[in-house]
Image (cartoon, rainbow, N blue to C red; front, side):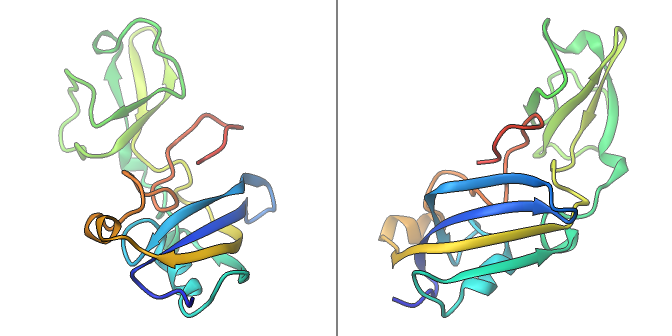
Length: 174
């Protein structure tokens, strides 16, 4: 079966930064919906009209991956609005309750980057923002998408490769 939307592909990959440092490796195949929001557009584009067994290596500049780093998304909040035990690497889905910084996106995931006695530094950038990436991927399988998957535009409840969750350094991104 050729990869054309809507369908589901099972992929494995190795993700490196432009200097060759391994960022993530997916050795057990994971399914992604083609024709929705599960995949970065450049990844989906490379897969079109291919089939199981297809292998490719992609170089993704930040604008084709997770965007440029935006220093305006880094800001301070008072330590008093955070729970006890707050530490670098923790995340908030949206602004924490009691946030005092105006004009920040409310739908971003904010990562705590530093904790001080009086304030906490939050970063709303994707952890891979501003980084050129090299992605070596292999298609393990292709199948027709179910009606439920087509309706949802996704295999799962959240996209995996387009919105990799921020994790502390050294932990897998999937």
